[in-house]
Image: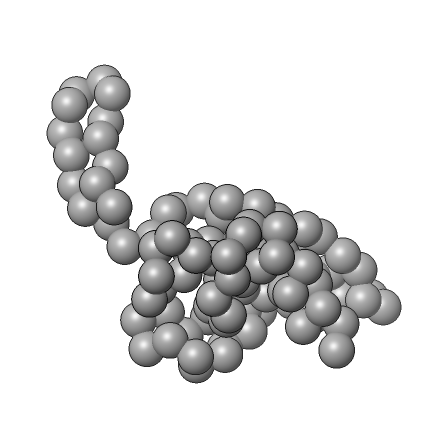
Length: 89
């Protein structure tokens, strides 16, 4: 992914977006769960999810380049739903 700065014209390459593409926040008892969707590390045309539980990030170990992401889904919505399901299973 090539990123361009509109202000100065500088460009650089990044493997992942800095901000999630979609997110959901749910409460599980007294814990707050954040489910975020990012680009899949092995296929940039697909999506993966990450789960943050009360400030701690779940380690899935599924992808060597990003062990905090899980799954490879066709749509952002599908990845978000899978993340919510995983968070509450």
